[in-house]
Length: 362
Image (cartoon, rainbow, N blue to C red; front, side, top):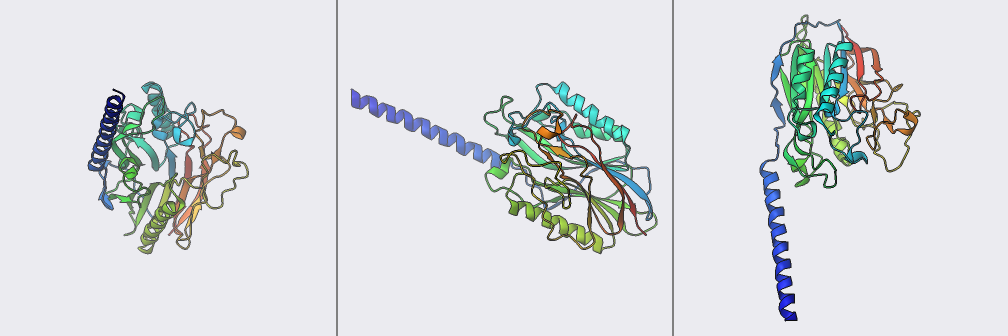
C-alpha cells in the first residue's frame, strides 16, 4: 500500500509539472505571436492641422512633459521604483490628472509640446484615450508614435492592483505648425526574448516643420530613452539618436530634440539632489561620446524634473529622491533664448514640465 501511494504521488507530481510546462509554453507562444514588432522606420499618421507659419529668424516656444500615463501623480508609487502599485484605485484619478495636465497646456501656451507616456488603451489607466484628450485641448496638429504595446503584460506578480495587463502607449507631439511628414524611428531593443515580447519598444517621434522662407526644415524629435536597461543598451540608443541628429543638421535643417532622457543631463548640478539611498534608481550621466559638433543641451537644474516613485510624494524635497533627466538637445543653428523647469510640485505626474524658448538663426 505504501509503495502504491508513493507511485500515485509521483504520477500526480509529474502531471502537475507537465501541466505547468504546457501552460508556460503556451504563454510563450502567445506572447511571441502577439509581440509588437515595428519596422525600423514607419510613417506616422498626422491628425488635425496647424495654422501658424514658421520662418528662419522666428522664435518659438516648446515644452516637454512626461505625463506618467496620468496615473503617477503626487499620491502614486510604482513597483519598479520600490513601491507596490501600477495604477490608481479609480478612473476618477486619471480624469483629474488629465484635466491638470490639460490645464498646463492652457496656462503655458506653446508652439509645440512633446509628451511622453501617453496611454491610448491601457488597463493601467482604465482604457481612457489620453492622446485624444490632449489633442482636443491643444488643437492644431497631433502625431503619435507607439512605444509600448502588448495584449497582456504578466507582471508584477505581487502588486495589489494585479498585473499590468493590456498596454497601448507612446509619444505624442502637439504643434501649432502644419506638417506633412512624420515618422516613428525604432531605437535598439534593450531586452532579449522572451522578456522583450512584453516590454517597451523605445522609439523617436520625428516631425518636419516647413519654413516659409527656406527650403530647409525644422525637425523635431520627441524622445523617451531607456531607464532600467544595462548601460550598453542605453548607450546604443543614445548613439543612434546622435547619428540621426547629425544627419539632419548636415542637410542644413534646424533640429530640436526633447523629452525624457531617463539619464542625468550633462552639466547638470546635482548638489541639491543627492542620492539618498544606494538602493534607489540612479540616473547615470548621459553618454555623449557621439554628440555632434556644436550641438548643445538646454535644461534648468534649479528645479528637479523628476522624482522617484518609491512612495507617494511627501512634498519635502529633502526626503525625496530627485533627478534632472528632462530637457532638450539643439543643433548649432538654434539659439536658446531661455529654458525653465516649471515647479508644479509633481501634482499630476512624476515629472515637471520644461519650457524652451529658442530662435532659428539666419
